[in-house]
Image (cartoon, rainbow, N blue to C red):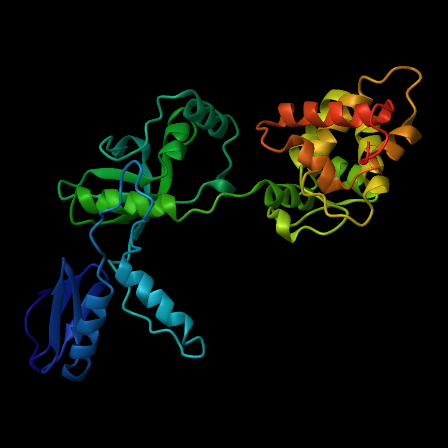
Amino acid sequence: MAGGIEANGTFTLATELGRARVHLGNVIIERCGDVWVRSVEETAEFIEGLKSNSIPTITSVGPGKARQFGTSSRTRANVAGQKKSKGRRQRQYPPVGSQPSIEWIHLERLSIDGAYQRSTDNAASRRLISGIAAKFDWRLCAPLVVSRRPDDTLTIIDGQHRWMAASQREDIPQLPCCVFRYQNIQEEARMFIVANRARKPVNRLDDYFAAVAAADEDALEIHQIVTEAGLRIARNTSSTAWRPREVAFTAAIATSIRRFGPAITSAVLTNMAVAFPDQKMGHGGAIFGGLVRIMSRSAHDFDPDRLVAALQTRTADQWGQCATGLKGGDMRAVALQDAIMRVYEGLIPSMEA
């Protein structure tokens, strides 16, 4: 209780969410340190909601475990049932846990727990931390997720790279943090797993279109070369969703521009547009790689028109079959280079040969 009982019989409780006033006839509900005040009429439904929304025990964490946390057979059955009732409004259960406090915390007060945190003792993490430190941008610094333990120590659940990067600088003494209270280290570890599994990484095409929107010079150059060749960048990473004249190998195009220049890259893309005007190019990356190898090493008597004629002897899918079973961009590109040049040189003038 926060204070005594008033003359009208009411009193207040101190909770994580602030003070809650209790009137005569109210029911006080406590669960895992969280407190709610409800009328008698609301109590039964509220308690059922708490039961339904309780966090299941993790049984699927560790190497080789395919099932994700929280996707038990019961959960899957509920999801399947929801598909049958799309017209119904989904029931919303009470939020789990208590609202965090938002605080600016000095770096030296923060720490990490190696029992569940990822190791940063590797080259990739060191590069990431150094990169954030070198070009620290407050606009990209989301609040860290932090656990306040019973002994008042502050342990980072999510954001250790930002914390370590800021610690390398002398002009950032504090970072913004969402501070929660967890029951124990096991719950901290569960939240760490959920936070990291819930993230959806940015795929290469989303990254490209974001870079174009941000007026990135490299992305704009790729856009210009592809467009002038009569092609366009696909919006979906799934080849089944691609349409004729769409390509998705933005990284290969960027590498070609950097190594061989825009002229060769543009010529290769133009040849593909002319040779396969109404065809999906599911193997476009391999074809592009093979053509880059050919055109970047061509002899003085090389005939571009003859190359286009050679490409038109097969469909894009048929050319792609030349790289079936091969892994790695270089191996696939070499296979396409050899196959295309055999046709170009007249050794295999057509598919019937």
